[in-house]
Image 1 (cartoon, helix red, strand yellow):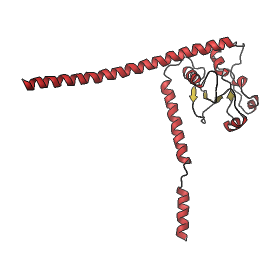
Image 2 (cartoon, helix red, strand yellow; image 1 turned 60 degrees about the horizontal axis):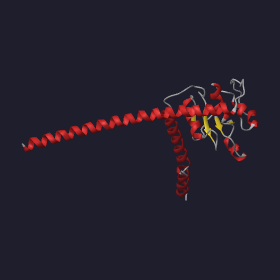
Image 3 (tube, helix red, strand yellow; image 1 turned 45 degrees about the vertical axis):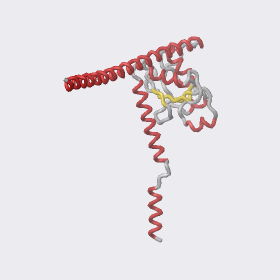
Image 4 (tube, helix red, strand yellow; image 1 turned 180 degrees about the horizontal axis):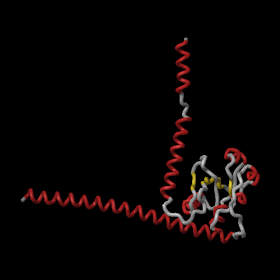
Length: 208
């Protein structure tokens, strides 16, 4: 009886219901995605969002793909999954159930990003909170206040200009990768041609 009890305790101590493995998997995945983001972030236009780590929740304007590009181009970080280092959640509309699960991280409208770029400085996110009651639980940050109102057409122009710049960066990165691949292929092709030439010479000598 005692032996059975010990074996049960041992099984309980060594049991893994999958949560530990899942946690390790997610941590590794988040680290890999962050590393991938940094590897893509080779050219920056400014450091407006330095120290800002955002995650997009739901549909936004601009969409998540453009916000990712904006953060990469302007010194910030884009998270696919929420992590302890996430500083802001970008959203246009969220149900109350989701808000409770998101914790105390500020939920900010995407206009905070586009208008910060338009004025070329990081604006106070509290002016763009999706739900104003969140401001009671957030720490006070000394960001510069908006000195002028931005018209919708100006913001749209900023988005379009930023998209063009992001496309240029992406095209430059793609061109570099293509040139690198061509160089490798040409190198391999040269070695193959050399081997073929050597083989032809050997065959002619052998026949002669």
